[in-house]
Length: 362
Ligand code: N2P
Image (cartoon, helix red, strand yellow):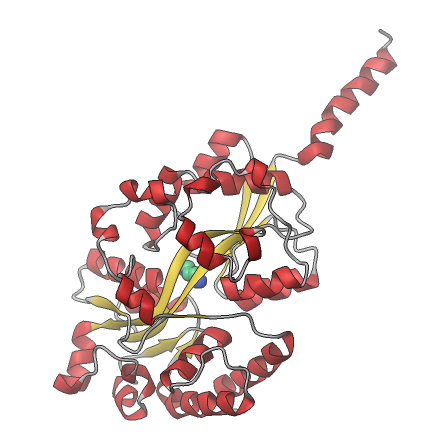
């Protein structure tokens, strides 16, 4: 063979894998939502390098997907957001022939998920959350005495109650659709209402407790609750358990409890999904299939305290996690819980303006 041909062949061989698919996957996930070694284990097993970025708010991902060319191969939207993203053509249908572990998922969960992702065509349920209240037992009892409504959303939504917690610190998720949905539910209204009068009532409720809220943020409360900086947070179930665990490890006398209020909590699934313009969709499928392995997802649940819908994974979930009703809620809690639905893009805009008013007071 002549030398130039050899060079040409070499170039071709080098270029071929890059064209087929670079050994890279770009993952955009919630913060504190994976085990410490998941990524390293996946890289070692597949030789695919993971670029891993995190966020703590659905709206951020939504905006990136809408803008297009996010560069991400995997995103993890909550069901209500995924529902709208699918309708907007932003999510790639799954090539299920590549997802050999899909049968591990609980058929009941898949049936529920299909209400947001028709035919389960676009998303793989990853973790199940409730949204409730986390509180510092001693601090809240000291501030409120025996009258503390320790089983109810009143802890946050009654202005005269939450005012007594202002000094020990109150935090609320910076998540307009979820928090306003919960406020509507507390008022006895439809949490998914798009009626502007309903929204005005929820806004009035939020404004009435606003003077007692130290900040709106969707991940800062984990550390702050854990180290006693704040005493009450409206937050995601697993994050509050992470705070509780950290408080226990630190042994500084802070005991954190997670409360699913008796009036009912919001419950949701986050889904692994592939953006329609993902640069490495085949690697994304490999990543999803890896997460669907029972031991892999069980290790994540054990680390971040969110329940997963993978049936054979259950035997690898630690006993104290499995038996914790805040992580794997009993049927009666699920029955009282409510699910967020997708909002119309028009209502999202109204909601965003309302939320800004609540936060800034303007
Ligand atoms: C993880 C955040 C939980 C996912 N820190 C929110 N749906």
